[in-house]
Length: 414
Image (cartoon, rainbow, N blue to C red; front, side, top):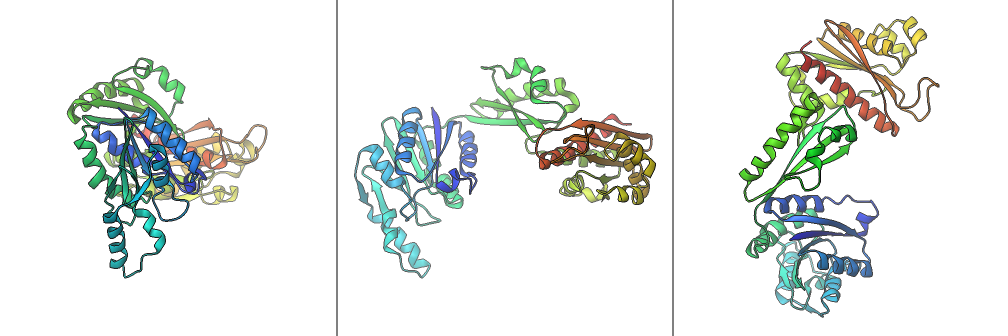
């Protein structure tokens, strides 16, 4: 059986608010072994809601909806469910008393409009809301079970855990678990990564292996369905081993781990200090490092040298080097790293220069061209890369490139 999650509200379809409810519900359902086949977001429009619920109830055995249960005229879920089921609305006395009691506890008079929250499609059951005035709705139409919950996240969380989840368990709609393991990589594109893993990412593979890309990080998602957590982990383990063997140092972490965390762990294990000299990233590398708890033991600080004058005065980059090769060059990137390492007396220094846009610096320096320099006791080197994307994307991805360059150096043991 598959589930569909319906998120209701024009604030979602307009982009004003982000739909976090669907993500949260999908994760909770995975814990129960319930597969989510669809996420649907619909505006506060009566006919659009009726169509969305009709489609969902035909193709899914379970529909979980959030939103549209408030007291205002654009809260349509009660009326929509009655129309879909072909029944009338009725007033539930217990729900009305609960709503009135909540207003009384707050020393407020209940507006007459809130009475609408006690209306339910005939044959439906009220779901207690312990955190707000809007009760949920539990009903069946055809072969589909429907649970409609408030859109307010805190109310929805509480209602699902205390009321909806036990109902799903009682009906035997769960069973088993869905466990996801995410392996994060940096340094190759999506297609190049998949070329090494074609036997794993093919359709029908057990466990399922998919690829997602987010801001230059390519992640492998291993999704296992099994009777227990141990069985799911047993499915995942050999696949994860294979992925790591084939991708090697491209892998920097799992699940929510980020590059700066991997760098911090390596700095600690190697007992190496680090500083940054940033042009194009203007402090983003330092900011990412600073987000890691305990990094102060190894990250000494950095310099933002956006202007060429500061590259010369603060980082001792020879003016002649800038005039000969240009500020966006391998030579200048390396010189910045060397100067930073010397001035701040650290084991490693990483630097960034580049063209973030929106305009090319010259024919030889187009938007997206960047260099990352690295200096250590044994010398200095640089990495060139050309990004596509917006100004912010070029800067963010260059910061990741710089962190990855540090990570690879520490792994190499040079």
